[in-house]
Amino acid sequence: MLRAVLLLFLLMAVPQPDTVQVARATVDNAAANDGPNYTTDGQLKMPERYREWIFLTSGVDMSYSPNPAMAGHSMFDNVFVNPAAYHLFQKTGTWPDKTTLVLEIRGAEGPSSINKRGHSQSPEIMGMEVHVKDARLEDGWGFYEFTGPGSAKLIKRPANCYQCHEGHGAVDTTFVQFYPTLLGVAKAKGTLSAAYLKEISTPEMGK
Image (cartoon, rainbow, N blue to C red; front, side, top):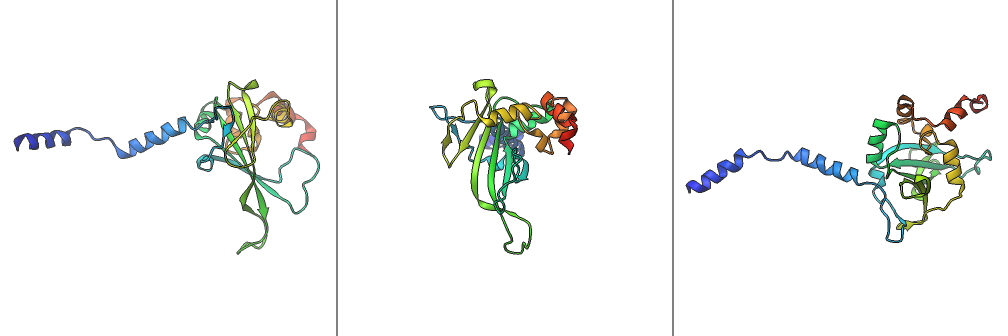
């Protein structure tokens, strides 16, 4: 009986782990391993929980072509990034290896329910593209276009997506100029690309 009481006293005296700290550590560990995952043949696996990642921006009918979009076919572009990369960007102003940016495309729907004007996003995903920074890839970055769940093959160079991002991306071949929560960070850290700085200094760009 005395031994049982002594054991209980010792258990009460030993500091027990804070459940909040344990939960936070679990989340931190998960975030540190939230980068790209590949199949055995090198295809990128769909980041299934990307909608729990950091939301960067949403654009409507964005295009890098001077030709206008087809009338009545507006689209939303939603961009997400893995939390580990986002937090390091906040500290450095650039992207670390294993950065994973997801571009999710949804249709723009017209008036419905109590919405009488403007657009809301369609429940259906119309397309998905993933931009990955991986030192094992040529020039360190790769694009993957998904047509459904599962995995996607690397888009091989040369391709317009590479040329456009490398020629106009504000930071490390990415369009940080369209990410309102990160552009100021890049300016403060001095990591804006020479190509982007040249573009914004050209008078025609402001017209």
